[in-house]
Image (tube, rainbow, N blue to C red; front, side, top):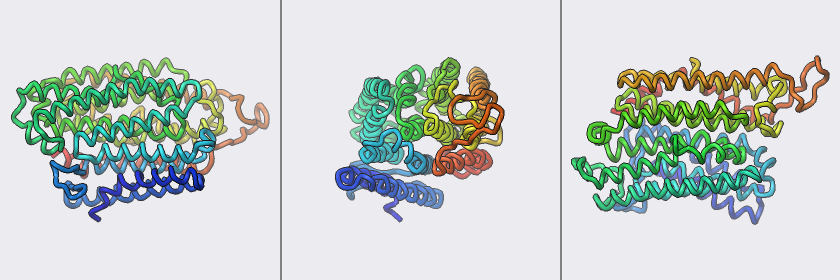
Length: 493
């Protein structure tokens, strides 16, 4: 029981190494090996969440060295929830995307599965670690494996998108590392909890202020907060389906988690909201991010790229909520980490099904898709309604908390931006629905111009996962009150 925390990260890491070895022995075994590793990670994450809910925060010490000297895994309700989210989505995506990998990367499947599990290992490590420098190392593991996977996508644009991501990613990592260096110079420690104790009462220190600004800027670049978002649309659009399905719902959400972790655990509420007085400026920046993402999404003709700009909007929701300086706003931000990950995953699962069957994602190429792929489009519609914020889907409830938090703060511009972006999403998605439902397409085979349309759905393994995730949006909405009362509010208290 005590080693479940380590297994969350170690299982996918070890199986990634074994999968890499089997590339030269029997490549077909790479897939079941990485799948088994993620299954162990999911089970361990669930066990850890149950334990944290029962007994409180867990500490796991590596190699027998006690913190702050040794590296510590520190798990509370917030990162226990995010660990379940990351491991669960990565596991389900691997099941759903096996056929897509065979279609897109048929000659390098074993190597790809190795890199995939290393990417997931990095995300899980970022979520669970209690050490600032270890966090940097794990962010870079995540980034390096991202660069490789993006480059394996579109043969013409994938490598260039990856290169652009590398340049901007290095800048973000450098900012964060410099910030950690300043904190170490001031405190002599890298353990998050220890640093928090050592900087308490040092609100006037220019060193602490510099460290905070550098760390937050680095994380904002990594999460693609507007105007640092320029790397994201092409990176997510031109990557392989299996990677876009996991990076779109998880990468930005994990970085939002890191921002909240730094705000609450390391620097503290009092320093951020009572000493720095940056809340108003950041909420305005988040408002601009929401509006800019929506406007840029309106101009897109590629469905995947349209969704990436909606992600830019969603990042603005979470950053704005976290910086409201009140419990309602932070509750909405944390709940939206969960909800937006599920919504984005459901959307990209449906898009992946479309790519597998028709190999196109330009919106004009989706004509008649409701008739050809009814189950896929059903899941897409449900996810789209959740993004818009239609009850009882989960998207409505996190937006409701964000609106309440903004109203309490008096940030009516944020409320207006949130409502406008929801209307923009409605326009975008109903335009897609109209094309898919009312316009006849040229792809596939039809019996006649007026006869029944031949159904050409994605494979069953893809449909089952897509359907389950889409239905989970309603379940998460119905039980949002339970999630808030049993996980989010106890963490914030």
